[in-house]
Picture 1 (tube, protein in one colour):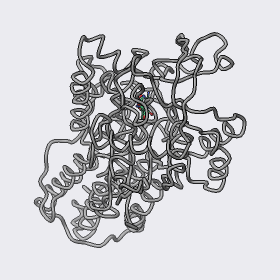
Picture 2: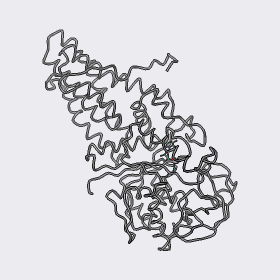
Picture 3: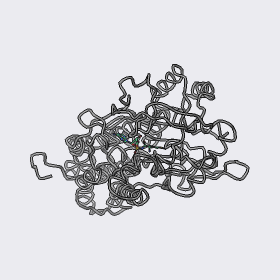
Picture 4: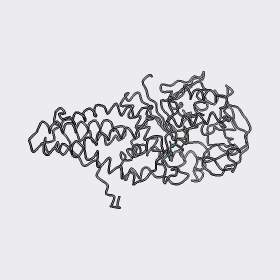
Length: 502
Ligand code: MSP
């Protein structure tokens, strides 16, 4: 398929309920998927999400609840699925790493790489961080604390299977250098590149002895081991959209992915392990890997293990789905960290949604009702300013497309800024034109042209915000109607910050 767009989110761990951080990546992916469906056509877009269900972390969370791992993951996965339904996430497929289609594919990949000699057995001694599922060398953690999460490391000695990453290190450096759009944003690409240039990649331990961890995919070449969590999970991106035949050839309509989205915490696994795994398998690499920033609470990363998470459902119940989606994508430039607070949501709500968009819709509908009995007038823009706004309307789709392109780092924030630029211009136009005077002076043609322009601004707005705020877009389109309006309640009634009740 030439014209297609295959986008993925990470597979989230199901050891606890989803929080704002998970919803952020998924909402961003959903917005791009919706945008691309509008540009390419529904059948050319594939949006994959899912859950990472094996490993010690999950086994321990199940043990703590006195449940079997299988029962535990079957229960927690529902919290993710329910949240995505609540947030209007339009995924095409949801893959769980415990599904047969995935397990079969992982075992096939393991066999191919084992036969090729890229996976081999060795004895491992060193330090291990269970929460991060990562091995560390003594030299990397002289205080025996995990360099990432600062929790105590466990000392481990065991026989395991290893994937020879180092064999492909020079190839990967060369590939990243000659493919500037592969790792985005640019600053992350530079980080990965300098990491690769300054460090020799150690072999990646891809297994666990069964006696220590049985909750995993059994290796096809050792009955005593299961796969290591990253080697299992990354493969979902190909297991969900294709299969290997008996000759070990992979077939898929969707691979390679056009975009893997994630936060910076798991960039290295995606930008180093995954490309090497694919290259070793003889498969194409994803077109782009984008690592966004973190949502912080009081400048600390929000995470389950730190216990400072905010439940997205609470935010949606308070502010609505679209307000929540809008806030996340508008507040922080994609790629940077941002502090999450309800004060910031309320501020955005009152200024951008109540004052700007809600007000423009309400006053326009009121004027159509008052001056034209609810019929949308037909007229051309007349004034200089009117023509300027008309040009802005015409340029907006292109500007949105540019802002949402890989070249612009999928700049949702800039895109919304452009859309709100038009809304502000239209509100200013109302204040400057003083339509009540046009009515008083019986300047009907001017009044028609003026109101028609506002209606067209709203039509355009509803079209371009649809990927971000699907329900709001629908509601605007419905209220504006084809030629007869159907005025409803104000979309975003102002939040009174003096009332503590909210
Ligand atoms: N299971 C692995 C991913 C395997 S992908 C083949 C994993 N899971 S996770 O549940 O920890 O999810 C990490 C991802 O969740 C981040 O990369 C990001 O997409 C999202 N986020 C989790 N916390 C976040 C923030 N505080 N802020 C922004 N995004 C965050 O890693």
